[in-house]
Length: 161
Image (tube, one colour):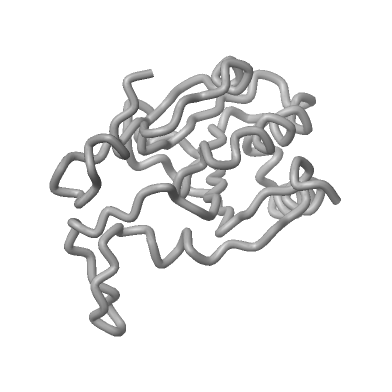
């Protein structure tokens, strides 16, 4: 199976959007593994071990598994989440940094085309550029740029494009 037919996924779940202008909206979350930043300046500690983790989602996005598009969609169908998406729930792609997998995500979204009027939100650290074709598929971007207190160099955390 080619990498363009799979994603490295940390977790998927159904919940309520908790940030941005769509707060309170039912949503299917697709959390992808990997991030291009480490944000060591943040003070999050593992509640079990006390180890300084920096980023508050690091413990999750560092542990993903390769999943085929068909297995993700089958899981969502089994859970009833495809129905929720068809009824107006948003698809929220988050991470880590999901733009690291945007070429594969573009193909994944093609698989969801039968879902009419799917609303897609992208959560990003805003340090990577969108592929134009991918940006055309997104309805809303929740950008969370990292400031100097994140511990990242401005040259790495800031992309003016």
